[in-house]
Image 1 (tube, rainbow, N blue to C red):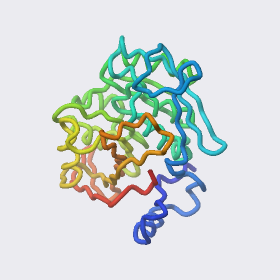
Image 2 (cartoon, rainbow, N blue to C red):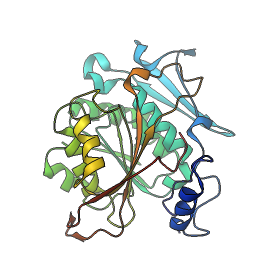
Image 3 (cartoon, rainbow, N blue to C red):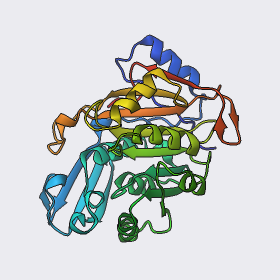
Length: 298
């Protein structure tokens, strides 16, 4: 059996949240140590063996290493920002999301994972390396998808990681990706324009499994970019989706010198509400509940 989708409460979350988390976990189904704290995950980016900041990478390739305890993976990336644009560069939000994936790798083992607006698709590749059964990296830019194919093959994941065009505002791509069929949906810093926040929520709601799906993303704080304010307002007020939202600031480890603090990055967890009503993939109920903080330490 696959492990239950659960997020372990941080040590300081209080008895009430710990009790709520325990009530949601199917006893014995979640492996021990599945929810390591993100602060335990070290991430380094190197070019020719020299540590660099991702945004400063000017060479044609770089390496990303994630490590926690005795576990580590290293990925090789072609860096094609000059040809592909912003989608061809590694960004801080994607690195933080990759930390979450690596910290919770046991939860993703054997699962189906989809990434929206993937860019370099670092979280997708980490999920594949950690044992996800199937990974679909999606983006609206064809040259970005070509780069993901290249990097997936370069890291030995061409059979696990597929790519597909998907526009958050178009129903066709969402339907083609598979409505209600994904255990996890990932997204990192992908809300740039007005209306994209609502599009992101709608796409996430449609793609996640209707009984137990979980979406995890890293986004800048409210007001940093157009569309983010409406995204957070939709989470707080509804009716946006049948998703329970848990939002908290992404804390930074001392070794993460590449972090962009002025973006006020937030970890956003959107969990399917099993009590919501669904019909042919379209939700009938409209309910969003905001919790104080996510049940996985960041």
